[in-house]
Image (tube, rainbow, N blue to C red; front, top):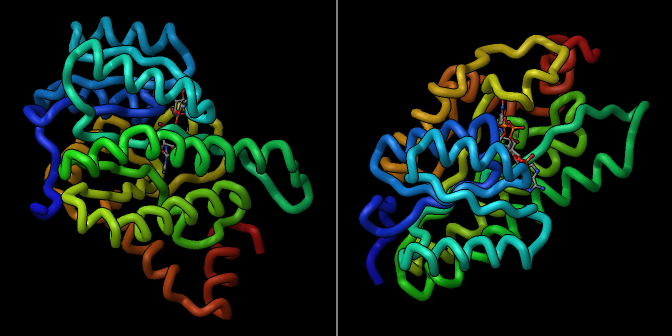
Length: 259
Ligand SMILES: NC(=O)c1ccc[n+]([C@@H]2O[C@H](COP(=O)([O-])OP(=O)(O)OC[C@H]3O[C@@H](n4cnc5c(N)ncnc54)[C@H](OP(=O)(O)O)[C@@H]3O)[C@@H](O)[C@H]2O)c1
């Protein structure tokens, strides 16, 4: 079995979930620039059709809700059958963030984030991983967040789901390293997208989506396990990760005015 290596456009298709807006959409355009044909999945068909038109035939719209295992598997199957090419690179990016707090805890919102961010990622994973393992090659990248390093304020569900995705990727790596399939975890800081446009708090080191997509594409081609950016913000949050609770709560509470 050969060692996992970054996938290349000649290996097959790239597949991106959550490709109808924000990071996923921009990454699709970036990968097309770099020679890939991209299969784009999300629920909004009109947005996917607009993306496919913009990419002049190099993006294949494959609409599906990531929480629907049958629909995801059918979309993946159709794209591979129609092109006669396997998915060589899968970027599992579909996700959602709903502000929350202990005082306004909403069980439905919590469950929805678990369903999309964790179950949706597992469903997408299950639709490509077995074939990659059987071929002994491929690359899977899970989009988590620096918000998964530790519990952040107003992110009870979001931090929990993103921490779960980091743990999932870490755990997968032990097995996948023996199969020839590469696994990466992508941990962005704040990126300007429709998701963060809803935020009503200061977002340090907010990054344009074009720059974020380039960072991700570069990171995928380089093949390091973690792709985290912007570098300085990620470094600060990594430091928070190793702080003892006695320091973590006052430092983060004070800087985010939650204490
Ligand atoms: N922006 C940031 O600062 C930031 C930072 C760290 C991590 N992230 C992560 O990056 C990923 C993309 O976020 P973004 O900022 O680009 O947000 P966005 O613009 O809101 O994009 C989210 C994407 O996920 C898709 N999606 C949501 N629910 C879905 C479902 N049930 N089935 C299929 N697709 C679904 C949406 O498409 P439809 O609505 O058409 O289904 C959309 O394409 C998320 O996982 C997010 O947590 C973002």
